[in-house]
Length: 88
Image (tube, rainbow, N blue to C red; front, side, top):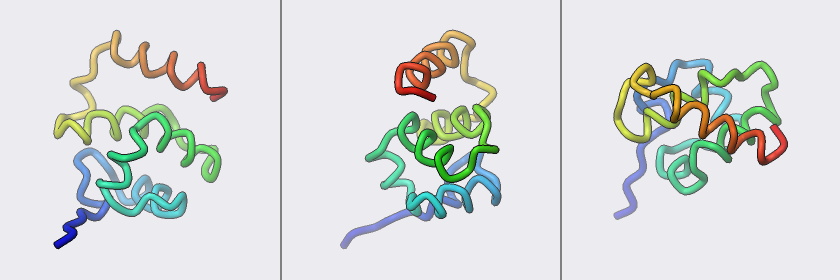
């Protein structure tokens, strides 16, 4: 049986961010895991330019089951660099 978890059940994710992810075609946590947080963030930004880095932090930490505030500045810097390297 293929069990999927709706994106709304991801830790740190509010209803607006969940709507943005669904609108971008990311409806489950498993889809987010396959894409990875960086690519998912870039896809959402194509559809929703108002999305901020707080969405990226929420996706990264949510996939780990952590609160987004636990991300270190070094982790944030690494992810910012990844986004910048891909034209964000």
